[in-house]
Image (cartoon, rainbow, N blue to C red; front, side, top):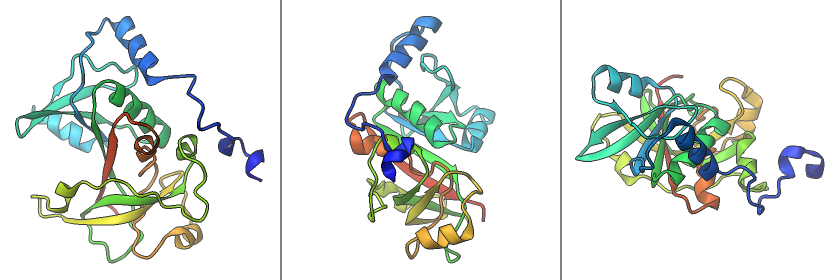
Length: 229
């Protein structure tokens, strides 16, 4: 059955015909950008709310040499260190595209920040959910990792500092359900897929973690802001 589905027939060990290095180089050439690294820590702000607020308060400034055809990067200063932030990179394929370019441009850690739906009713709202594993119900991750069989959850590295935030919002480590659209997961599928205590994290909730599982370009960690039901 799997052999008849194009999505599952990728030669995962073969190099890609389209590389992020070539894409970044093309942007730099066309726009005459300097070859400088981006900050080592970058945030993909999927909803864009944080970026909008930082820009409105003049806490963020444009990054002059971020080489990307599709996005703009702003930089902020946190504890005397510069961090990059890119708004509205929602969707697994899009997030992966930007993350790959970040890693070849000098980023060492990429954080994904998004809003998320809630499966577990005991999960407080608002809260911060750090995805420690995911159930794959989307398409992008199959370009990076093979079918997981019965072991559908993939463990990720954790961000220890996220356990004790200063904002007073509850923080929890959860398994998230990665599904193909923001409202496409039907109730039966959600109930069948979720392990006890899981929290649904919506479209592209953990797809780009696959990069760090199969490359040495960097580490991707994700924190989900569970601000809506």
